[in-house]
Length: 213
Length: 213
Image (cartoon, rainbow over all chains, first blue to last red; front, side):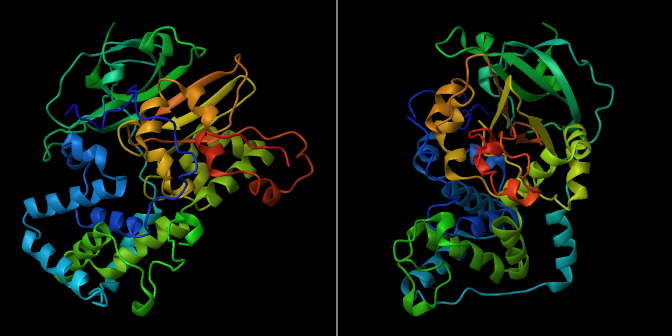
C-alpha cells in the first residue's frame, strides 16, 4: 500500500533533532516493542494501515502500540474489553502489579532466536546480473510492499545480489521467494540537479519490482 | 536502561520504581501496561520471554559491540577483509549476532562516505547498535536523508569535501547496513580498547565521523 510511511524525498518535516538520542520518550517503549513482537501484534503492514493523520501525530512507539492493539483484537487474540479492563485497573490503582507467567522451558529456544543471525538465502537463477541497468516499474500496489515511490520509473545499476527473500505483501500462505538486488541510482536521475553535489542512492529491490530499461 | 539513555524522566526515577515513588504514568504507558497484562493473563506470551528479549535489546545489543568491531577492523587487516566480504561470518567470530543482524558492512574512505537510513520504517542492525535512536526514526531524517544527505549531515555537524562521493543506503530488505568509519590520524599507537572508545553510534550510521583524540 502506498501510504504515508513512504517518506523518502518528502519536504516539510524540518531539521533533524540530532539530540533525540534515546529510543523512546518515556522508558516503556522497548518492552512494549517486545510485547508487540512476541505476541504477533507487530507487522509492517499493520503499521502502514494506520491512517495518515494518526501516523503523523503518533510517536514511533505509539504506532507500534496502536498496531498491536488493533491486530490482536482483529485476530481475536484479545478483546477490546480485555484491554479496557486492564487500563482501568492500572489507572484507578497504580499499584496494581503486572501479572507474571513464566515458561522457563521455552527460554533456551528464545535465547537462540535472540542471538542467532538469520542470513539471507543465496539467490536462485536471478534474472539480472551485477552491472545490469534496470528500471523500477511504475506501480500502485494495493498490498504491503517495499518499493518506495521515489525510485519508481528510475533507471539504476545492479551493484550486488545479496540473496533472495519472501516477496513482501505476498499471500501469507505462499512461499514466494525472489532475488533481491542492491541497485545504485544517481541522485540526478532521482531528483534532478540540486544545490548539493550528486550522490549515490543504494536500495535493495525485489526482482518483480524491476524490468529491463 | 539508565536515565541517561532515554533522558526524559523529569523526576529522576527509573522506570520500575517502587510503587510509592512512582511517577505519573502517561495514557500511552497505561495502554502499554494493559497490553502486556492482558496478553500474559491470557497465556499468549510469557513474562520471562519478554524479560529476555527486552534485556537483549536494551543491554546486550548496543553500539559498544559496533565500536569493538570497528576497532578490530582498524587493527587487523585480515579481519577487516573478512568483515567487508562476509560480515555475518566475521561478526560470529566475535560472538556478535542475532535479531536484525543480517549485516553488510560498507567502508568509508578518502573519497567515499556512506550513510544509512530506512525511509519506510526503522531498519537497523540491532546486535551491533542496539535499538535506533529517536532521530533515526524521525520523519525529518527518513524523508531527507535520501534527497539531501549533505544538508542532513550538516545538521549533525559533518562537513565533507565536495569531492567525496556520498553513498546513501536506504534499508529496504532484510540486509542491515553498518558503516565502517575511517580511522582518524594520530591513533597509530592506540590499543583496540582505546580505539573502540573513540567510536560513537553516529559514526557507524554514517551521520558522524570519528574524531582524532
